[in-house]
Image 1 (cartoon, helix red, strand yellow):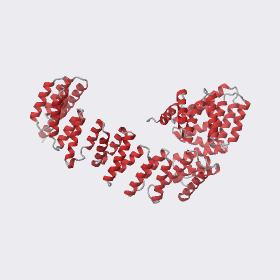
Image 2 (cartoon, one colour):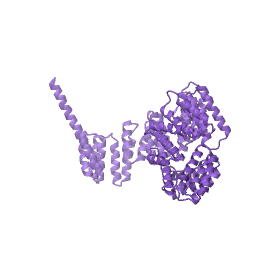
Image 3 (cartoon, one colour):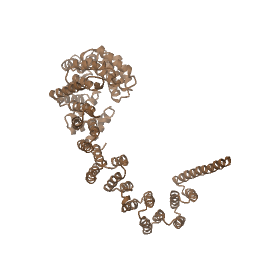
Image 4 (tube, one colour):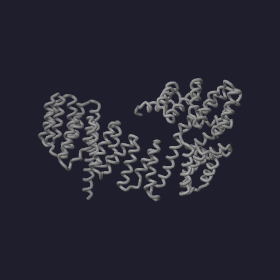
Length: 603
C-alpha cells in the first residue's frame, strides 16, 4: 500500500514538473516572439510542439517565427510534414496559404485557402479551427466564408453568428454585423449585454436608425421573442427617444402581463434626464393600470408628483393655477397615505412647494416640524428636513433657531456632503448678519469640501469677503450689502432694492457696485423678470469685466438664454466668450461643454 502511494506521489511530481517546465517554456517563447527574437522563439516553439505533437498554437507560432525571419524552406518542410501526418487537419492548409502570401504568391495561397474551405463539409471541429486561423492571420473575408458555410447545416444555423458578426464588424459591413449579432441573440440571450456594448461603441445615429428598422422586422418575424422588443426599447433609450421607449415598454408590459417594472424604469430615466412629460406618462400608466397593492404603485405615485413638481418649478413658466393643482395632488396623496415616516420625502417636497413657490412659510415649517418628530425617519431625509427647516426659519427671521439646526446636522455628519452643506449655510448665515471674520474662517475650510459645488461657492464667498474687507477701513458698506443678500433670501425684494440703492447713493463708485448690479439681477430672476435681469448682467460684463462678478453674470445669462428663453445661438455666443476670456473661471469647463453641446458636437 505504501509502495503504491510512493509511486503515485512520484508520478504526480513528474507530471507537475513537466507542467511547470512547459509553462516556463511557453512564457520564454512568447517573450522572444514579443521582443522580435524570432529565431530563438522558433527554437522554443518547435521544442514545445515536438513534445505535445499536436498543439496547433505552438505550431502556428513556430511557423510565424520562421516566416518573420523569411526561412520559407524550413517552414514549408514543417507544414508538408504535418500535412502528411494529419491530412484531415485543414488549418494546416491555412498555414500553407500564409506561407505563400509571405512570398507574394497570391494564386497559390488562394488555392490552399480554398482547399481548406472546400473540405469543411459542416465539420464543427474544422469550422472552429479554420475560422480561428483565418481570423488570427487577418484574413477576415475568408473567416466569413468559413462561418457562413456552417449555415448549410440546419442545426448550425446560428452557432457562428457571433463570430460572423465580429468578422463583419472588422470588415466594416455594418448592416451584416447587425444582422449576425441579432442572430446570435436567437442562439443565446445571455449575449445581450455584450451586443449592447458593441452597438454602443460602433454605431452612430444612422446606424441606430438602421438597427431599429431591423428590430421591427425581427419582431414581426418572431413575435414571441422578448429579446427583440427589449433591444428596440434599449436603442430608444440610448438615443434619448424616451417617448418611443415608453411606448415599447407599455406594449411589453401588456403583452407579457408584467407588473409595470419596465415602464417605471423608463419613467425614472426620463425624469432624471428632464423629459418630464414622458416621465409623467410613464408613472400615470402604472397608477392607472396597476392595482394599489402592486409593487410599483406607491413609487409611481411618488414619481408622478416629483415629475409634475419638476415640470412646473424647473421650466420657470408656471402659473398660480399650476401650483394650486400640484398642491392639491400632494394633499390628496398625504390624505390617502398619511403623514408618517414612510411619506417623509413627500412631506419634505410638499414643504418646499409651500415655502418656495406658494409663499406659505408657516405651513412649510409646520409640516417639517411634524416630520422631524416622527420615529423611524431615514437619517438623511431627517437631516435634510432640518436644513430645509433652518432655511425657512431664516426666511422668517429666526436666526438663532436656524443656526442651531444647521449646527445639529453639521455635528452629526461631520465628514459627509450633507454636513458640509449645513456648515456652508451656517457660514452664510454669519455672513448675512455681518459676522465676517467667523464666516471667512468657515468658507476657507469649506474650500476643501468634497462637493465641488460647495467648494466653488465657498471660494467665491471667501474671495468676496477678503476683497471688500481689504479695500475699506469700515465694514459698513459690506454689512449693508450682506443685509440686502439676506432680504433677497427672505424674498423681501422691495426692501432689498431699497438697501442696494442706498449703497450706491451713500457710497458712489464703491467697489461693491458690480455686486449691487448682480444682486439686482438675482432679484429679477426670482421674480421671473428675465429681460430686466439680462440688463443688469450685461451692465456688469460691459462696465466691470475685470471684477469677480463678470464670469458669474456671463454664465447665468448664458443659462438663461439656453434653458429659459431658448435662444441657443445667443447662449452659445455667451458660453464661448466665457471660456475664451475667463479661462480661469470655475465656470470655464462647463461653459466649453455646453458650447460644444449647442454646436452639435458628440460629447
